[in-house]
Image 1 (cartoon, helix red, strand yellow):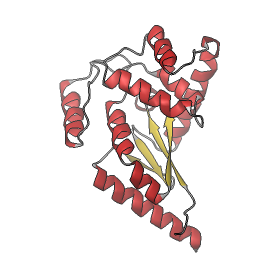
Image 2: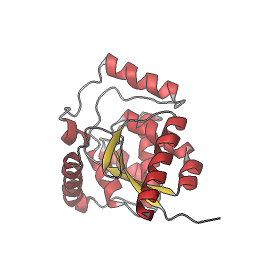
Image 3: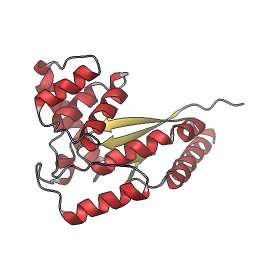
Length: 202
């Protein structure tokens, strides 16, 4: 059996986004499909408020809440939605610092589950510190400023790539926003992988 070279797909996310959490869970259960297509997801956090201008702390209106809950229900993802747009910059900045290490997927899982399953407030530094201790490490607060500056750079770069929301899958430089049911995502990613490999072979 021919071994395929891995294709890397960047996925922009923000812990504040409930749809981002839904995407996290959908792609988690699609691990076998990703392995079949030899696709590796590079989960990349950004500051959604910097992209959209949506004010941090604003109460999530009923129309938006109903839409997210409908999508989650249709995709069979249980979710506990925050009542407001969470300021997730500190958690996102740490995730960015952990990119390429074993801490990144563990941190992404721990923070997402804390917000969207346990209903915990990650805006509280003590809560973030507690989540880090759950994973066996301490957060070095001395690096906060540098981490936030790095998050700002990534957010501006994503905006330049025409990213307008999260989750966004970057397929060959094209931003594809949102999350669909497993079969649709399988078709989308399968076509992308096949097309990319055909182009590389020519």
